[in-house]
Image 1 (spheres, rainbow over the protein chains, first blue to last red):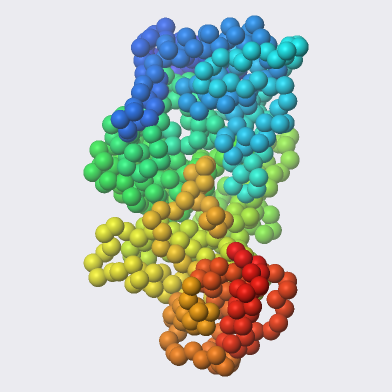
Image 2 (cartoon, chains in turn red, purple; image 1 turned 120 degrees about the vertical axis):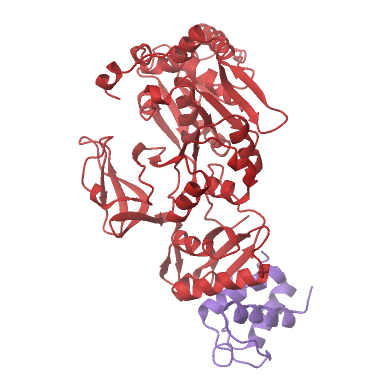
Length: 466
Length: 89
């Protein structure tokens, strides 16, 4: 955000003044924002955990500030070379991030599936929900002698398209996409993402930097999420299309109607036209934005025009954030973040449809059947359009005969439309695929399931169920 | 577990049904391609269905190199795999 836009902004009494916030060094901003909110409104609600369940608990900003101060003092005394956040509670992760930032201690957030990578962080100290540094081993602990400038933040990739790996970030890049202007202050944010992954960290940083309320549902169960939305007055829902689709398909409609959502931010996967239409119909007042971001690149662009993909005119032009998009010959989207950086392959394939480029899927998701390519996302879009189907996923099964074979899972509507049976819907799906797809793209294995599994990052998995 | 010959016939029936073709009686001497009209995709589907019902995929191991021309070829490959316990899924 440029200094000019900041200067014109009014300050508010209940949320931190952005100017005060921006004067703080970038690694200090989370602690500074929380401190500022406590000065203005000490008992302001910061986090609602286990929302939508009987175990609901809430944490206010002054509780966070006290815990940050205590951990800061401990870090200052011990000077560990780095902290691995092992905590499972969001409030603990916030405290660890804020205290490490302020004390210039590098911090790593490792999601469950990337815990094996901890070996790469030798000598770092693990911190759990107790927020207490473990006693130093005999012979002492390696101390941080020189301040890392700037202090690093390590986040693991979600491993959607390969094994998870650690990515090194600066506080600058972590906060680059945060919206600090006044219109973003004091809002209710729903956290359906894993709090230790890039997307989740973005949500809790955004909420707490702006005096907002972070609402963490007790689970990803659609009814629990819908209850958290309605009961906690959530106004912003960041989610993957997969999680949103599941919410719309399976949550109690009366709970969804009670929500006061005014913004949905989709990311992590490409959203197709159908889910955009469906979301708009369920939440007519909500503005729907699609964010294209990766753990490695951070946020590349946002689209808010309601269409899938992005306008074709964007190719080759500098976008608002400074990034430039281009295409490899095979349709892979390439991103150049700035003039000084190299072009980076995203692994996402796009195709021109009318005046837009739409995503056909990830390169690694392509199923190869007897040498012919199948884009699972396209098959899924077709399958989801069949009456009686609410959710679908398509993946490749290894085959000794054809290399791979297209397989799929569908979730049926409950109740089914009149005159339909599970068998008739399944037959209709296969017929729609035969009529609309090349023979090799038609799913050969099609299972009826109660629920489509999602990856820990909230995406649709492309691997056979284990 | 159902007899292999029944499992094979069931799998082929499923393939014909799922691909919108007419059901028909299946006899061991029938040629998979010429008599039943099964192509490589149909065979690949049949193998996945049989792995589910019989618990083995004899085609996964390189040892299975014999040609599969008839229904009874398919039956004997699975019978051999089940008795030798090969390539259990």
